[in-house]
Length: 384
Image (cartoon, rainbow, N blue to C red; front, top):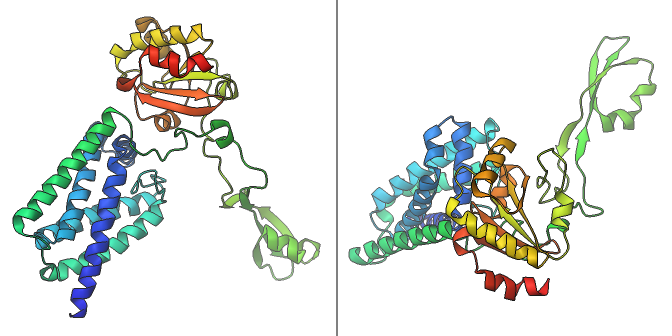
């Protein structure tokens, strides 16, 4: 076997598996990927992308999976390699632009399962681009593994499965939760910085001038102290820069999860560290939350009170919008405020219901999957 055929075969397998893996990771959480697309829409000032972000999210995931399966099977090699090339050029441009201009901090290529910076993502896309360009050059060496009808059946089946997964996870919750608010996690622990964890490292640059030669010199704070140049009368201190972060220390996974009331008073510790069971209604966008579920949420909150279970709503809306909403649906629970980003991460639903017990996430539901009052009583509240 000639070397180009061997290389093409290796590139074909790597590209196909990476595209399938990337598509599956994101279709497991299409809402999360749609939030990332909304960030890109703001960065590039493309309002229509934000409008159709969820549709684009599912479409891109399905396309990745279909092209990955097609290249593995070796069907329509010229068309598929060109399709892969167009897609990877788009992704490479997106990640390069975002990284260069600091538009979006994380790319979302592998969802929340494998967080990557824009430069890491761009490097990955360049690697894929080189492999795909090579396959475009030697596409004739990519031979089908199955007959034409079998290949088409496999591709159509993969598309159907991808669409089904996307539909299921949108209308319920992701099958696999890679976020810090997943079931079983103790939230108070994730809000703390462990003892001995590395802290942020900063650097200050000192500028000095030689009194004899007039030469200026810049030294880092470490060099400034190590050389003790400040004791040398030939050098005159000119200025010092603002501290610059050179190495980030340990970041608490839930550092941005801050819950306040309408007056801005912090209630995070009080809510997250509440003893016993506690219900959180996550309704970050009151304008698009399902109004038909509100009566059930009110009934559940009333039932929970009988068992001394606190129920709180948390939203990212303004106080004016909250007041109008509370009057409209006659809320039977307290409402607090939090930034939209952590609320979108807690549960991929609007509204979403989260059950805590002593600060640990016991369970969470999309509003359509809200258990019956009987199930709540028998499974949870009786043991509060």
